[in-house]
Length: 423
Image (tube, rainbow, N blue to C red; front, side, top):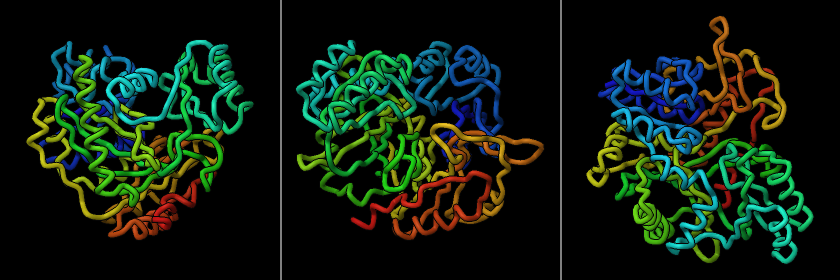
């Protein structure tokens, strides 16, 4: 069969790598893709938001299944466009992708269906939000309602910071239209855990757990990023917590979306906070996480194409989803200065070292080919992933592998997965 993947980052590279392992797949296309994806798929110069062109391409090439990696096209309705053209596509429709597309929608959904989450209030007016903050308990969390590349969340320790945050989101529009409405949320404390799942509208199958590191600098300091590294599984996500989440969060979310006339098919990413009062939902995403995908898929035993199709066809209950009993760690190699200002175009050396090394992977996020040479082309450049029998071993392997790659202004955190020492 022929598969089209829509997206251009490390997540899409990991998806393409996993799809390429399926004996059912003879050809992979990726739009727009990147230099690393180009090694296993044919990259097509069509943007992720160019729905008409993507649909026309899928028809022209007789694509059997399209997989949407990114949030923007999902929230924009790409699945609806493909379905209207009679094409098979993996991902939630627009009315279901709102689970990620609007923080206010997801908070209201959780409140209505008694799914545990932080207390909150929504505001369309900066003056109303500022008035609310006068008596609110600090610290407090401000979230842009819409998509903001995973960066539209501000943790404010003081009233002054919170007021400045409202100005940043709603008046200065640092994240554009995403900040026209904001959610003001109680600050929760505890361990953060990411849990990805496959959903077919009725059935939900949970993947292995992971934990992301969002801040740019060691010790969770610096600005929020798209993610500087991750590890899987989380030692803090116990069997008991899994049981509670299945009963109070996972299936109830799927059932709530169906009850609202928004059946969800695709990936639900649960961002959880393990609080003293039990696990609570921090956020939902309507697609694979980045870089969580880079540690989850290398541990997945199933043919991912079978699982995608089961979600599309509503037969996920027949799938026995399995993961290896080991661990994986991903360290992001970034351009120094990310997520603000950084230079691009530096030659990358050492990628060939990964060839033939079992349990070691390098996923391209921001690279391109220039005269046969891979060069940096983004803030997050590469995701170096390694497996091990234990998290500590996987962490040691991943950091050893980061030394195989060199490029000017290479930057990374040195404490990815350090939390495992506290487990």
